[in-house]
Image (cartoon, rainbow, N blue to C red):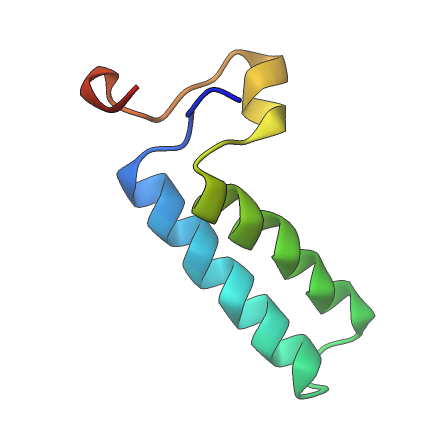
Length: 64
């Protein structure tokens, strides 16, 4: 898959994903908190399938 998630977007996805997973694991939010796996995975893999479908890209050209 093509890299389409850049710097700030990637960091935000990882942080939000980890926070949601932590909140779900400690019982502070319901089971929906496990959806944090999605932004965490897309941040770590540097690719977002939804971005591909929508034709979006936050990755600078030098990193492709």
